Length: 327
Image 1 (cartoon, rainbow, N blue to C red):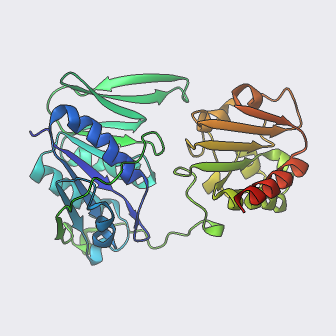
Image 2 (cartoon, rainbow, N blue to C red):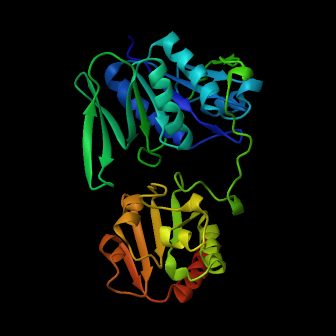
C-alpha cells in the first residue's frame, strides 16, 4: 500500500463544495510527513467542469466519473465508482467531507474495500508513522483521538469549517475522465430531485455565518427579520428544535443534537435559551453572539458576546447598521 491520499470532491449543482478545498489542506498536512501524493476523485454531473476549479492546487491527478447512471446521486452508483478507484490505486487514506453525501458514501465504500472508518472528525495529523484523527463525542463535551491499526485504507470524514481551505499553488493537474462503474439498471435507488432552501442561502453545515432563531420568534412570519439580517451578512438561517417543532422553520435548518452540527465563524442566536441539546450542535462556533431578554438564559454562558434585550428591536437595528457599514 502506498502513502498516497485520495480526496472525494463533492459536486452539488455543478459546483464544487467548499469542503473540498478544506480536504486538500488536510491532505497536504498529512502528505508533508508521509511523502505521499494527493489525488482527487469527482463523481456526477458537472464533475469534469468542477475539477478545473482545483486543477491548480498541486494535486497529482484528478479522476472524474460522469455518465447517465451518475446524473443524480445514488449510493450504489457513486460507491461503485469510488470503490473501484480505491482498489486500483490503493491509497492509505481517503478523505471526504462530513456532509450528508459524505456520511452516506464513506462507510459504504469502506465496506466494499475492507477499509477502516473514522467518522465526523475535526482534525487529522501525523504522529510519527501513525495518522491520528480527532473527533468529538458526548455531544462535543469530550474529544477522542484515534489511530489506524494495520495497513487497511483509512476513510476519514471531516466536518466542514474545521480546516482552513487550501490555496492554489499553480501548475495544472491532469484530469482523467471515466464512465460509470455500475449500470443504471443495477442502481436500485436514485435521488430524483434536490429542493434548495428558499432565498438561495448557503447550507448551514458549511456557512461561515449563521443567524438562528428560537421559540421566542413567536411565529413563522417573524423569521423574516432573521432572514433580512442573514441576507445582509451573506449568512445561513438556522433554528432551534423548539422553533422547528412549532412550525416556524423547516427541519432542514434545525441546529442541535437532533438536527445539524454546525461550526461557523459567527453564530448569532436570537431568542434561543441555550438548552444543552442546542448547544451540542453549535458549541464549536468560533464566535457566538446571543440576543435574549432573559439575562439568566444558559446561552450567555457560552456566548462570546451577549445582548440582553428584545430581539424584535435589536435585530432590525443590527441589520440596518450592518447595511450601512457594508455600503
